[in-house]
Length: 235
Image: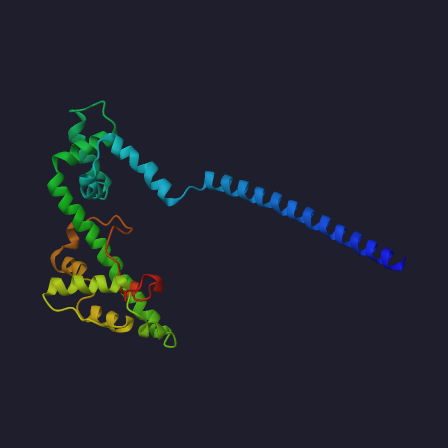
């Protein structure tokens, strides 16, 4: 008799605990649903960087810009506003009802080769400034953190090997076969780091390039890539 009473009591405790567990699971499911809904509302108001780029880009494409005009457009939009308006003013009489972007496209088409060359030089000059600043920052980090040199003994990164191959080809020398991350970093530094950007430094007159600020499309910075995630390492 006592045994049955004890069993029934324990069964009631079990059923109560099971019921409590199910209520908690239902509550968690509801909280998950609310979290997903809140995230969806957040994403609806704070779009991704890719969304901004695509949304802005279609306006230029719709006006007649093509990918081949990208560097020329960079140069046109980087000049002082007085120069910009002076350039476009010449096209107003030709197409008085055209939009601003359509006038831009007309001007870019007429000066495509010249402006493309200037735009490429502008982007390379920006990349070189970013490269130099990154290398200075990295060197300072090394000086300030002498106890964090373990990265040097790790495997060299895929980005380092790509730059080493590119540099060796440009200089007409044989690329080294096996280097750890620190050795690869020192090899790149000894051979100019990024020859593409170094060549720009020797051949480009910055006084002829408008400074629009920001970074252009440029090669990887070997200083930063020396500490890249191991997931991208080369064997």
